[in-house]
Image (cartoon, rainbow, N blue to C red):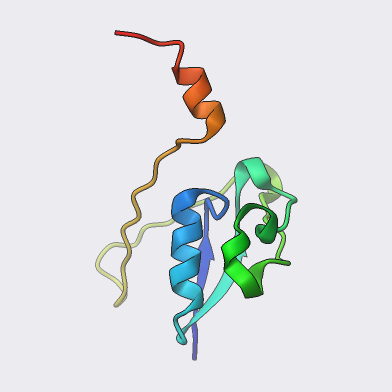
Length: 98
């Protein structure tokens, strides 16, 4: 039985990398994928390297995501470090100086 995985932030760099890794794993099935700034677009529009998932639509229904963390229960874990270096972010922060 495959492990079903949801990916929040699927339209960003880290989301694309985790999807690339997960799609090559035979024991993983990709479930829901969200991408706030790309909601409603297909994954292939923002992550062309994902192949089989390209037609899936990124969702952000209700604009609220609940994350539940249940420590010390389960046999799998993941740590994902992300950043935001989109053109909009860089432009917005280029006005600051120190």
